[in-house]
Length: 372
Image (cartoon, rainbow, N blue to C red):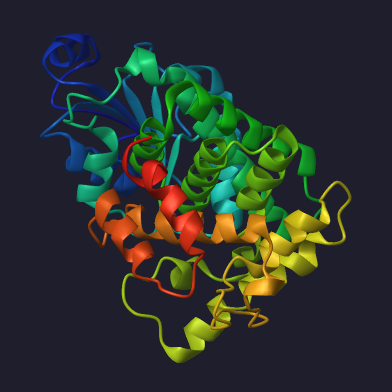
């Protein structure tokens, strides 16, 4: 079994339809037999599973509910093999890439190949099963209802991953593409509201990329609730999309570390606002207000923030809105190593940050946090 190029879940090809009638059908692709067998073994108790090696001829014709790919994306042959299957991959609702050699470049490559979710780091069965399973919440939108939203999420995640890669490889940034992704998020939140966006993002993305998507959604909804004009809303979602771009220079192992950061790691994390600002200020089409927000989104009114220890009179409106959105999103985001904080509890944390956040804005944020 471990040496086979094609693995079927205790059935033959003709038996897959029978199994799928009772259980969702998942197709697994891998670049090595032991990886293929390992992922199939993780899934076979809950799903009807079929697997193929990437170097084998594609034979399965049935459209699966999900595709799981475990392959080294540093290998050009693996990338070529995945691209050959692009047409079939696009038909699956979920396309989950498992990246053992995780990096910003690897994540960007996975999204470019059609991923709807990237799980970096060692393969973790509970995380994978959770990613493949639909939420049990009966209020969650049906698959047909979420399709437009998933498109917006995928476009935004791809833009963020490409943005991080541009920093990592010192390449030009696609400013227009990033702003267009922000516009799509604004359209979806205008149509469907914030709660649906948060649910979708937390279900499909992890880590720093999830955080950027959450901050953008929260900031947009906050701006809409305040009634800001179109130009200011564009500045706000652009600032939210770009705000953590400096983290592209920080290893994912530190960004996604489950425990408390030590002093050296914390100091490295705190370099990201200046790094992002320095990278962006050489690009056209990025306004001074957006640059200011990228550099100062960790500043507090009492002067206790970083990197410039600004105080109230030096902190602009977009920064004040973005900082509240950033703190709130960090509290409610989903990480596999910690529970998601309820929105009401997260809002209480904001209310307790006396002197750091603008009190009137925190009050105005309440419907965004709790009811919108």
